Structure formats: structure tokens, C-alpha cells
Image 1 (cartoon, rainbow, N blue to C red):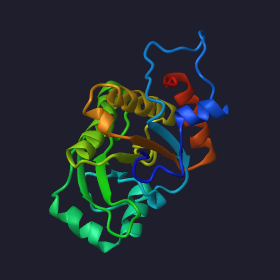
Image 2: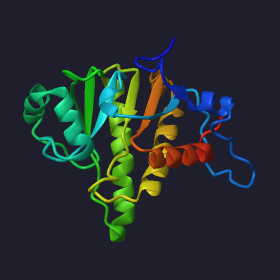
Image 3: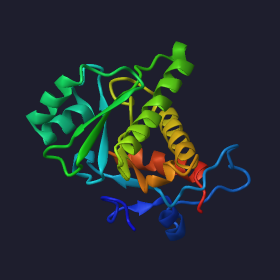
Length: 213
């Protein structure tokens, strides 16, 4: 059974079969690879138009809207989203909270707060970014949601280097999906790339870290 909102997307396994992604070879194989390619998807487009069970918002700690993805999601969802966010009393960096999706195609929005990047605190920032993905997926499972779509978290005004952020995202999601029977209830996780360059970056990172089932 296809998960909520996945019908029009291609999984990494399908992309590998079609040749749009190439599987790792012995020279590029990473120390950790994840056989979850049938549940990881890549899509180029506007996350506010994605109809998965939940989309993830790269929010700020106030949850009161902002620029970039955060502002776009609030505009598309309508004022009701801002009102519900106000009742959540903010969110800490690395944590995640859920609301309804209101006028969005997605029924829910999972708001997570990424780290403001500082090279002198790289490990702390990386740990916080990993936590954003883990907590978002945990919240999805807690609410019995089968599909989640992620933007690139913290790579806008928060300044996280895009390639490092993509690698952290792919590794963290792959590890989470492979961990246990509970995680298998997630039928699909979509990485939504906004630009052609972001799409190419995720294609490269996914081809290194994800192997076909």
C-alpha cells in the first residue's frame, strides 16, 4: 500500500532502478549504509504543495512564523496555524511540536527548530540538527502518521553548510527508518529540494548512503 501523498513521487529504490541515481561502488562506499531505499523519497518542488500526512516546518523558537520555508508554510496554511502555534508556547532547538495543517494539502505540520550554525560549535550544531530529524519522526509516529516530508533544515538564514546538512539528514533518517518495527510504520520520508542545485546535492548524498533493498 502506498503511503499518504506518495503516489506521485519516486523512491530512491525506483530512482536506482531507473538509473537516475547510481548505487555506491567499492571506492565510494561509506562506513554505514541503509537498506531503506524503498521508503526514502526525493522531490523537487514547493513543500507547501506536498500532500504527505505531515510536512516539517523549519521553524524558529517562537513558532510565530518568519522567512523562508517557515513564512511560506504559514502563508499557505492561513492564520489558524499561527493561532495554534501561539498556544504551544515556543519550541526548543532540536525539538519538534505538531499542529494541524489547515489550508495545506498536508493534514499536519511538524515544527522543528534547527540550530544557528557556528563552526566553533560544530558538534553541538550537528547533534541539534540530528535531533530535529529524530524528534520530527518520533512525533509523526506518536501521532500515527505514515508519511513525512522534510525541507532542508537550518540551511537558510541559520547558515548551516548545505552539504553537511544534507549528509546529516540522510544518515539520521536512514538510521531511524532501519532501527526497529515501530519505525517501519513510516511508509515514506520525502526530502523536498527547492532548487535544482539542492536536488543535485541530495541525489549525490543519497547515492552514497542509501542502498537498494
